[in-house]
Length: 103
Image (cartoon, rainbow, N blue to C red; front, side, top):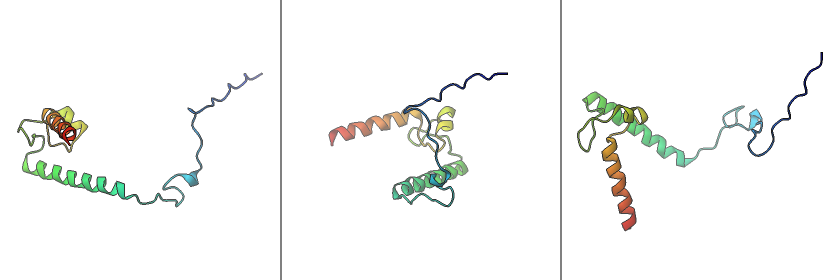
C-alpha cells in the first residue's frame, strides 16, 4: 500500500506563522503593558452602558433623544448604546463634517 505524496505547504506573506505560547499576551504570565489610550474608551463604554440602563429604567430606551421617534431594531441590535435614530445620527455627522471644514 503506497501513500500519495503530501502536497507542498503554502508559503509566502499570506501564510500563518506559528507563535510560541510564551510570546502571546496574557499567556504564561506575560501580561501586556498598560496603555492609557485604552483606558478612556473603556471608561466611556462603562458610562454609555450606565446611561443605557438608566434609559431602560425610565422607559426611554429605544427613543431618539433628538427627534423623539423610535430607534429602529436593526440599529439597536448593531449599537445597543445608541441614543439617536439613524436619520438624526446622519444629520449630526453631516454637521460635524461641515464644522471641520470651517475650522
